Amino acid sequence: MLADTYRHKGMRKKLVDEIRSKGIDDERVLEAINKVPRHFFLDKAFLEFAYEDKAFPIGSEQTISQPYTVAYMTQLLNLKKGEKVLEIGTGSGYQACILAEMGAKVFTIERQRALYDKTKALLRKISYPFIKCFYGDGYKGLEAYAPFDKIIVTAAAPEIPDALIEQLKPGGCLVIPYGRSKVQQMLRFNKIDADTIEKEVFDHFSFVPMLKGKKE
Ligand code: SAH
Image (cartoon, rainbow, N blue to C red; front, side):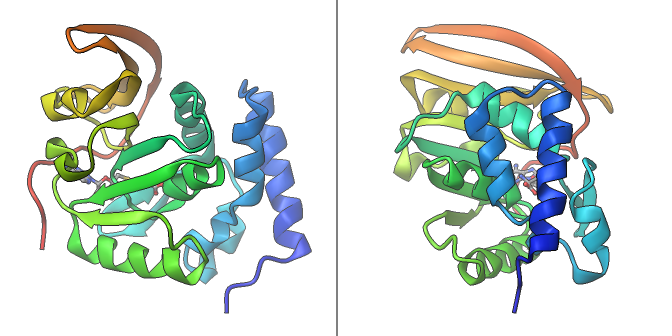
């Protein structure tokens, strides 16, 4: 059984204070970080690391993003309750749970079968069964469920996938770390209407690469 004790809650509160001190000021985002037990997403042995503001390996050569980064991207999404959100790069499932805590209808895609299986099972176990998990290539988006209010890519994109811009509703936005080197630039594409896309540039981050195709 996974337990969320007072000790965990205390550690989480400190993490929230740390993220706030680094400049995140959207209280709804901070509240979501305060609610989701990040230690559920790491192996038991790494409990002490769960509430440090650091990325951490989760197997299959992937990482659970740094909480500050998760908060930063979530803040850029400007989520409203009930919005349909597509996440590319399910990984541990932590970012998906933060989006769900904020009242979004979450669809998330992972290209690695092993991670997809593991995280899908975990989300059910820790009571986030309404997050819809898909095994596939995020470069293609999720045509069958489009359009989305918001799309978030949690891997470093060497190019901006056309499908993701297409699958956005007018008025929606895509938040994506863009670049081919070790460090990427956080971008936000706002879809004003079908033909008008506005680009905004934010801080630098470091993600694992967004790769093409699925991996068995
Ligand atoms: N959002 C995750 C962070 C995961 S790291 C979390 O909260 O833990 C990035 C993830 O993106 C990895 O699991 C990687 O396998 C996945 N990924 C990379 N390229 C992808 C693609 N084209 N489609 C779907 N997932 C992809």
